[in-house]
Image (cartoon, rainbow, N blue to C red; front, side, top):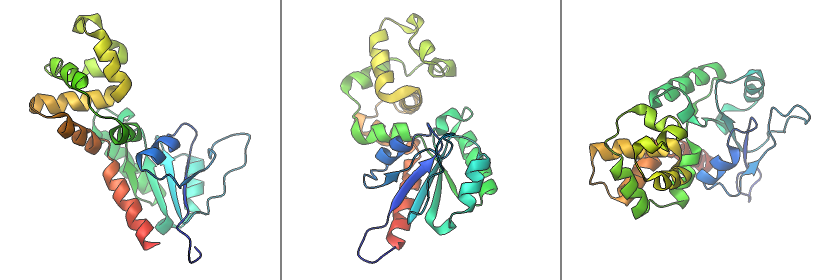
Amino acid sequence: MSAGRPPRIQITGRSRAGKSTLRNALSLLTAEETRPVDHPWQTTPVLHGDLVVYVLTGPPGPTDRQLTAALTPRRTIVVLNKAETIGTRWSDAAAEADRSAEVLGLPVFPVVAALAARTRTTTITPADLDTLRRHRHRTDPACTLLADRFLSAELGADIADRRALLERWDLYGVACALTALRHDPALTARQLLQILHCASGIDPLHHEIHRRYRRL
């Protein structure tokens, strides 16, 4: 890195890994998003940023292992995005991140970037909170495993309210909010938003990126 310019940050990874969403969730507006590393008709992007954020959505494949092996560990951060799709609990995603870290020889951060991005730009409205409180007593995990199940007429006549809730917070966000409200029905919208932000896993990654950035 030359003196007098800010560190150059690249966000890279597989296609559909959520690179743009992660960039927004972290507010890395000056970061460069590369083309996918697994595009069959394009050359592999050149990864020469001062800090490279490599995004996975599952176990690292041969291309991931090859590319990260060529990077300097002190300037590389690996993210396991869409962690909510791995297993049924956060511990499943954390275990997968640990396995990936062992394979790559780099720390791997499990994250739900879509939820983190929403908590930065969206508020929990009174209508959201009312709908969540109406359904907080539902403890069947199947209710929030599939969108069709959550929108079933069997759960009540407020289908439009539940659809609006899904559009704003996705199933993972709704499931986290319902769990929090079952523990404390008196949570405010602000408190619930903070809980969803924490549930996205974005803070440890955010802190690590800024630690590396300051060191650069």
